[in-house]
Amino acid sequence: MKKRRKRFILLLLLIIFTLGLSNCSYFIPVTNSQVSQGTYSGDFYDYDEFSRLPIYISPTYSIDDVDEYNTVLMETKAHIIKANVAITSTITKNISYDTKSGSGFVFMEDDTHYYAITNHHVIDGEGRPTTYEVKTYEDSESQSASVILSSETLDLAVIKFEKNNRTEVEIINITQRLDYRFKSDELVFAIGNPLSLSNTVSFGIYEGITQIENVEFIVIRHSAEIYNGSSGGALVDVDGNLIGVNTWGINDGGTSFAIPNFVVYNFLVSNNIIE
Image (tube, rainbow, N blue to C red):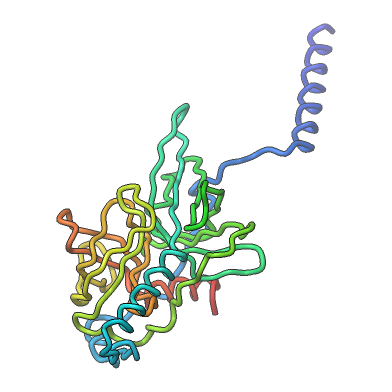
């Protein structure tokens, strides 16, 4: 009889505790397994197809006044800095935490949120509980973000974060350079947060399209320096239009690789992020 009563009391306490939780506000960290696994059509240009596309020509290319050209470059630099975000992923490992940082850029907004592109490896928590924070150009402190889509195969991800009272965030155009091949030796900008340095812009030239090991699509090779923390940052042309997403670099810092804009676009369209 006493055992039965004891079991009844334990059961009652369990019910009360469960009901109490349902009325509480509590936080469950987002885990990598809860992030939507992104799909893609695989309809990417190969080297021959890409080489037959028309070359993109910008009105900026024909500017012959040094001061006017310099003004364009400074405006582009200011624009991509305001589109850049620093991303911090905090991964729970038993009773300790690991953090890793990277970059991203805003490509879309709605009434309440901004949406940014980054690399999968920047947000990958390897199945462990992970929280995410972003910091824009105008933020004095990091603010929470969530991952809505990710693809390990493409090494791409989409995050979103609330607009709050931000007024200076700008959006990078991801479609202007679609269906054009890149101009040999054209000037490119890489924006990101390398080595914990915020909103760093480096200059270089587009060197060509190439294939690298374990990547199923052609990638961009360029000379704009990127380092640890640059991953996920935008690679843009002189007018600030997206060319690619900086993802890989060689240790000398002067040879860098980016995911092409057409792969990014395919990823977003395939997952109904954009039409």
